[in-house]
Length: 298
Length: 131
Image (cartoon, each protein chain N blue to C red):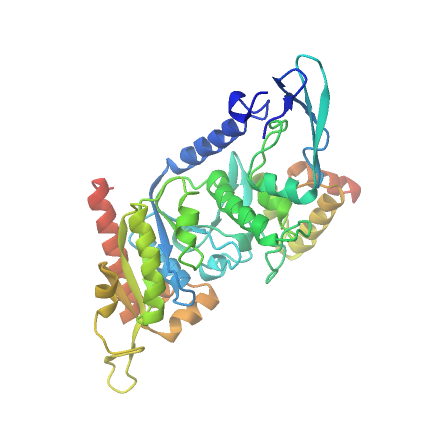
């Protein structure tokens, strides 16, 4: 009797052909995107999404065409942070047209698909004994569909905001049509750095170029003298040394960053001349420089 | 997954999928090209959902793929997407009545089982309201 490997093909479904066709569609979509960069953290609560939103805005301020794909399917927040909440994705020729934020930033996020504000990301599904199995598959499929079906147009940068968790990068990396570099966000705490180190190790093992580490909430500004003081601990640039990666920049804690995120106005647009605003602009300049150096300029 | 006709030792071929597109279960018929014997693969809702979530269709795709198809059909509370043309048309409606028009059109679209709002759906609402 024949066994599985004795039979060529799959009886007519052409599953491998369907998978190849999807991969081809993804590649085609990404052809107009010059740089696809992922922003990862490993640890939740370090301000990764705020960094993504402000880095996107800072790049846009530098005249770049920027898109943001919110790959945090369960905890989407990019629409709010980039001021496109309330907009809807539209169906256009050949795919979905992203929402458009300030400076023409294009945004695709799960929260642009939810029927009402604060609706949970719930899936229509039977109640299997182990729902996490298909839930993970659905989330992965959602990210793939965002890549496959979004009409980004010409972009200099597509920033992919990953969900927190050190295991998320290797999991999602395999779904990405392309990854030209990764940026890790951490805060100067040993716990956060331990987990972000795992993400960085994943990037290294996948041979993804790590552009550097952004140390968020690196300090606070003294109300009396205005000098930066350590917010978590006083160990200088221990973060960068511990991670063995170059520091792209340090963002001092500024309560206005969170307020701006809540209001849907990227902090760097409203407060460009503050220390934190300048730090974001400097990071954008470095990211732009790194990419320009690698690709030979725009 | 492959199917073998044990009598003929022949790989069975996909014949048809009874409820491939919309149902929460999946039935695929396979037949032996030599003896014609047929069997049906019946997948439960959990298995059906899992296969769909992989973005592939057993038996091959018979209808063109829609943008964000899987996400839209799987989200419990998904917003109806408007075509760019329909949105432009809605934008011509005076702003103070626009939310009401949007709501009416979306209600009609949902009642009709439409997955998106097109200009045709808007025309239907207009005729229904005698405008």
